[in-house]
Figure 1 (tube, rainbow, N blue to C red):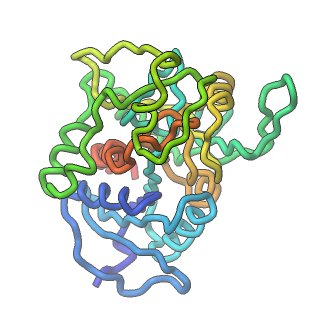
Figure 2: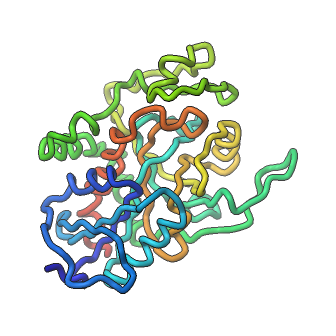
Figure 3: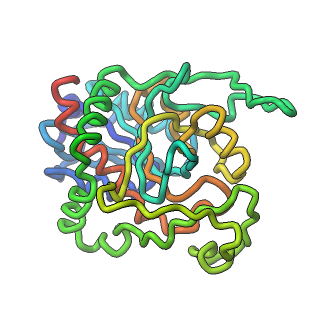
Length: 315
């Protein structure tokens, strides 16, 4: 039986497939059940060790800000001693000339300007011919996690990261995951002009087959010295609605510095102070979700895995 008081790191995933990715990255997985859960806590938890930390992981029953807030609330009631808190999921990128965000890249939420790291982009209003005006704000991640992120950012800048190595190690432990979770081909990463109207199709790779190349943006291949998956630091925009308007996507990227769009973090930041990490499933907009999602769980989860030793002295 597991004693809830011994767990010090809480990790929330948006989907069950992301939970599988998280479990594959444990240094040791615990096959235990809880002594007891808080009244009303119906979350399903997984347990394991990463470095020196005992970690508890939960996944959401469905997408959205409301389910995220509920899972986080009950996790805190059942596990009173978790301090590093993490939200890991997938998102739609907002590539720009300043931030070359590509399929499988990772975005980590950190404060930007006066904003705390997560932007609730439904809390605002749009006035014709004026910039989007935000009428609400969210808390920033805890300072000790931001300090850990700063240390790692400096290390990665000079030495590169270990994401690919961690992913390969995880897949070797669970070979059944390799087909669904291996990195997609570079050819599937296609960015179109925001004015392009995508053709609707039930096929997962509809853009590759049906959209042609006349509105395709040409991007240089990353060099041999570049990491396959790059880590970006800045604002993550969150809403209950999937971002499908490429024009608004580009506007928020340009005017607010948004790097990524997702659907859970805004439900957490004022009550479950945490670090948010998103793995890019493609560009936010009408073509989003055209590539099988499972392949993108591991980069974001791996970025948390390599962070385990850096958090240790700061938590």
